[in-house]
Length: 245
Picture 1: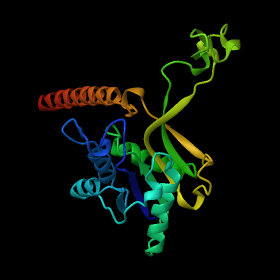
Picture 2: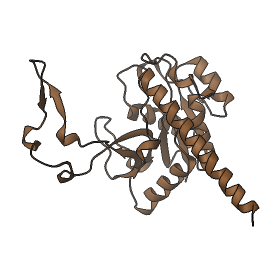
Picture 3: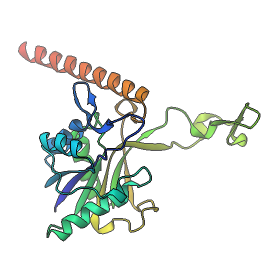
């Protein structure tokens, strides 16, 4: 089974300029995605799809491959993920290396761990699924959401839900913005379709932070530092306990 990790990292990010190689807790944020893919030991190739020479230089220095330049028509604000993945798969096939599984890993996923990639791949295989993607629960029920109307006041999106309790609604999830596995033989042919038979990999909310704005970036760094400090303290305590044996 040939597997590639594909990290989309175009150069035209606007809300956070040069986002994909901006320093996050001391190193380019894309480095964390590359490290997670490498440490999983799953992949034949860790590829970055980019149209940007500086990004290509940075990621090759971090150990990723940039075997092709992403075409201009796939590097604008309106292109979705699936055409970018399809381009990479076609490139490998045209170079005599057809791929069985592709894992799209976001360039801004610093809290993604190698073990999540491994566990999600194994879950996909065991359930004979077409893919697997990281998701997280919403912090509050979306079924009690509000909107601002034309008069500038609040109204419920679904007024009929007002008398209901939050626990009466089903649990719903959002994309964690970290990774998605695809079985290539089941890869969707239409980029507007949700791929069929995708299983969820539920991640803790304290390990998920979408990074689209400077405020998101600051929150993600705080979450990362807190997680790193708690893991360090736990490891130190284990080491202390074992020294007493």
